[in-house]
Length: 73
Image 1: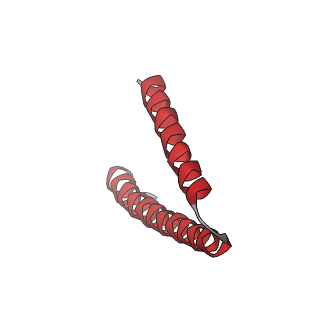
Image 2: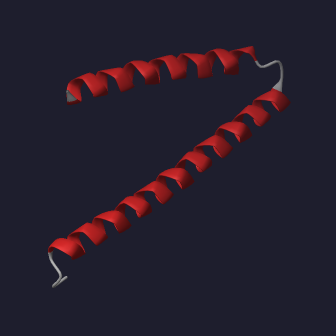
């Protein structure tokens, strides 16, 4: 099952990479490329922030489960 998920993610990454490259190559000038890079950086930062929040939420939920099953901790 893990191999299937990894394969699916690899194919998706290839498709996204192709779309990124096509978009980059079609930009008309340096200003458009700077705007594209800024948008790309903003999107990555938003994804990182969301992942950090999700990880913290999951850690809190797991901490609560562990505390319920082992009150010594």
